[in-house]
Each structure stands twice: as structure tokens, then as C-alpha cells.
Image (tube, rainbow, N blue to C red):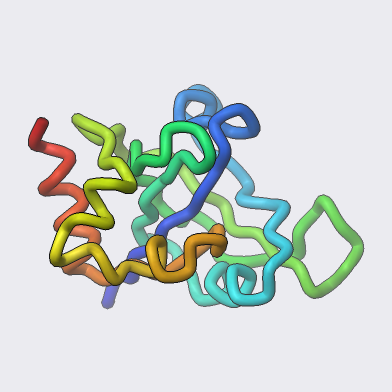
Length: 138
């Protein structure tokens, strides 16, 4: 079965990677953008997700896995909004900064760069692998 790759953003003061690790899993709720919502609906159990600290940090810090496919967002009665469940898989050896991503030939056209306000975005296998490669360097 083909695995897909994604990136989700969270402001560390709202929900940090460290908190996610402590929790052991989370409901990815509060998405209120239709394109991001459509991306949540496309996620499949077993897909891998880059966890990005937005606003503060501006870096990819870890890898998560989709453990439950989309369902109604429990934080709203509006049927338009959905969530997925994620669990942490691995903390990156070194965070990969947005500046590294923007300056990398392979990554400069990522959805993270081209659609910077999108909180849930697709990542290609090549981009995913490149982020992991960069995280091993300092």
C-alpha cells in the first residue's frame, strides 16, 4: 500500500512537539481552512506526517503517524470540519529550519513555502526524505 506524506503546523505555545510526546497521541482539531480540511480527509492510516513548529521556531521537529482517519471535529457542531488522530513516531536529531528549506534546491517548492498559511499540506516522498537527510546534519 502506498504511503502518503504530510506536514502539519502547530504553534509551540498552543501545542508543542514536547507536549505531543508526553500525550502519546492527539486529535488534530481546530482546522478551519477548506484546503487544509481536504488534506485531512485525504490522510490514510499509516501515513507519515512532519510536525512543524510555526510562528516560534519555524522548523520541522518530528515525525508523526496517522492512526485514525478523518471524522467529525468534536470541537464544533459544524459538519464541514474534521480531525484525524496522530501519534508521535520520532523526534528529529536536529530541527530543520524554514530557512534551510527555502534555500534547498529540492525543498524550495514545498507547499510549506508556496502556501505558507496552510496548516496541513502534502509533502512528496522526495521532500520527506530530504527533510530527514537534513535533520541528520548540523
